Structures are given as C-alpha cells and as structure tokens.
Length: 173
Image 1 (tube, rainbow, N blue to C red):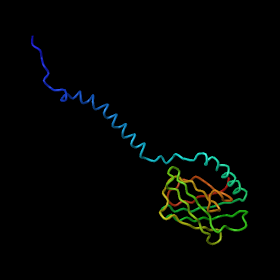
Image 2 (image 1 turned 180 degrees about the horizontal axis):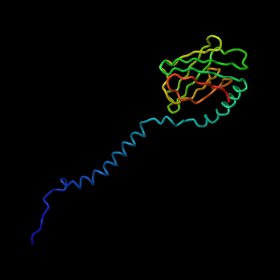
Image 3 (image 1 turned 90 degrees about the vertical axis):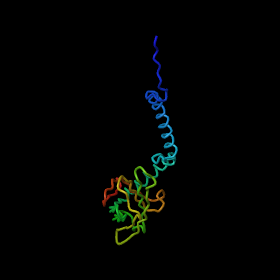
Image 4 (image 1 turned 45 degrees about the horizontal axis):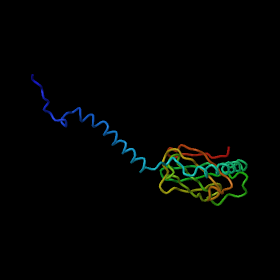
C-alpha cells in the first residue's frame, strides 16, 4: 500500500497563519484601545458635578436679576481677529459699569474657553479682544457685571453657533 506523505512543514501552510492572524489582530487591537483609553483626555466629562449642581440656583437668580433690570446686549464678534464690541442697554441700572466680563465657553472642549474683560467706551459701547481669535463652532456666551462670574449681580447667557463675523443678541427671557 502506498501512503502519501505531506512534505510541506506546518509553518508554510497558509491556513495555519490565517488561523493565528485573526486572534492575534484582536489582541493587538485590544492593546491599542487600552493605550488610547489610558493616555487620552476625555474633555466632555466634568469632575465636579456636585459643585455644578449647586451653582445652578445662583445662575437662575442672576438671570432673574437681569430680567428685572431689563438688560440687553448686542455683541459683534469677529472670529478671525477676535475683536468684540458690545452695545449694552443698561435698562434700570443707574450707571454703566466700568467693565463687563464676557465668558466664551466652547460647547465640547473646555481648554478653548475664553474670558474677556470688556472696557467701557463711548456711551453704551464696550470693547475687548481675544488675542488668538475665536474658533468657529458652538459657543456659550455669558455676560456678567463682575470679574468673578459667580459673584456678579446679573447674568446674560445664550448658546450661539459662530460662523465668521456675527452679531449675537443677549437678553434675559
């Protein structure tokens, strides 16, 4: 009887390498995913949920104060130059504040947040600038009367989609 012997060694069989490659690629992808999970920052997660929850009532009270004072601000923003001009209707406030604080909070990336102190100009105008410009996208605008945004008397806020130069109207609702 004649027996056929296979003379090809196992490491030269393509089917063996395919069977080894599939689980090996899954292990490599798992290590890559683990590496990315450990080394990258999750910018959307806030570390201080409790403190944020406590500040909600303060923000509501400040927005109510702005509504009672009948405050309105028209903000002209140039995203390329970063120049900001505000036409501020002081409503029932006796005198114009010497400065206003405009906080620009990026919708998803906290490291892009910007704070601009606007200086009082002629009549009802305030001006300021962001040195490196403002990136287009979704921003939360917050205008307050005090440099400490949590201790201001009032607050005007709005979520805005910035595209190039834009005018934003803030008023208490």
